[in-house]
Structure formats: structure tokens, C-alpha cells
Image (cartoon, rainbow, N blue to C red; front, side):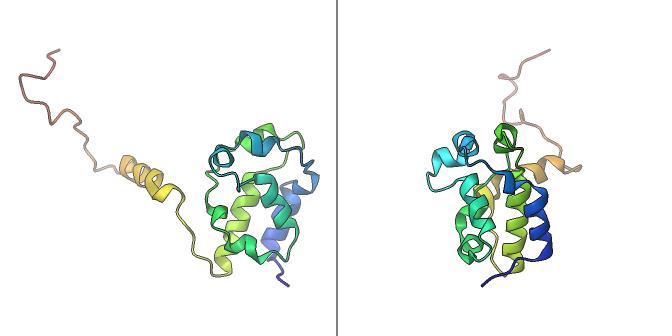
Amino acid sequence: MMIYDKALEQTIHESGVLRCLECGKCTAICPIARYDGGFSPRVTVGRALVRHDEALLRDDRLWTCINCLQCNQVCPAGVDYSALTTAVRVEARRMGQAALCTHGEAIHVWMRMMARPDLKQNRLEWLTPNLKYKY
């Protein structure tokens, strides 16, 4: 039987997952659930509450959530699904699971590129002089 660390136990209580009504609104609005019918924020909550579900920590779907917060916004019980997802991911890493990078890390690469102070963008560099618009 697996026992979660105290941080995950605390997040389970603080995120309000015990108030989940199982109405399914979170799954209905989730863009990942629309693409992958096997993913559901509500199911993740249920599996996290079962404290001996080691399969949850090994499930690749744990890493597919994009933390768009849409599930949090529509939840009538005010469950903080993103906090729970983050805490479960931390627990999975603590247990030695390799984190799969959501969307092949494309979004993170773009963020790093755009935040580089030394990056001087010149998107029109490819234009020849006769194609450039003159101001």
C-alpha cells in the first residue's frame, strides 16, 4: 500500500477535492478530455483519493494536463484541480517517475526563446529589398 507524502495529503485537503460533486463539468470543458477520452480531471481526483493507486503515479496521462484552469473555473464545488495535478506530479517525481514533457516541450521552448534578452528578432530579414514595404 502506497502512502502519499505530507505535501500531497495537504494539497488533497486544501484543494477541495473532497467536495467534488462528480458532476462532470470539469471533464466536459477540458480540452485534453475532448482529445483523449481516457483523461478526466474528475477521475484523477478519485484516483488521488484512493491513496493506494500507484498506477496513477505511473500513468502517462498525468502529464497531459496543460493547466489551462478551465476545470477550476467551471467547478461548482470550487475544486482546485490544477493544484492537485501539480501535487500528484510532484509525488510521481518523488517516487522516481520520469516526467513527460507536455506537448513535446514546444511551449516551454517558445517561452525560453522569447524571454532571452539577447535575442534580436528580425522577422523580415528574408525579404529582398524589392519586396520590403517602405514606410
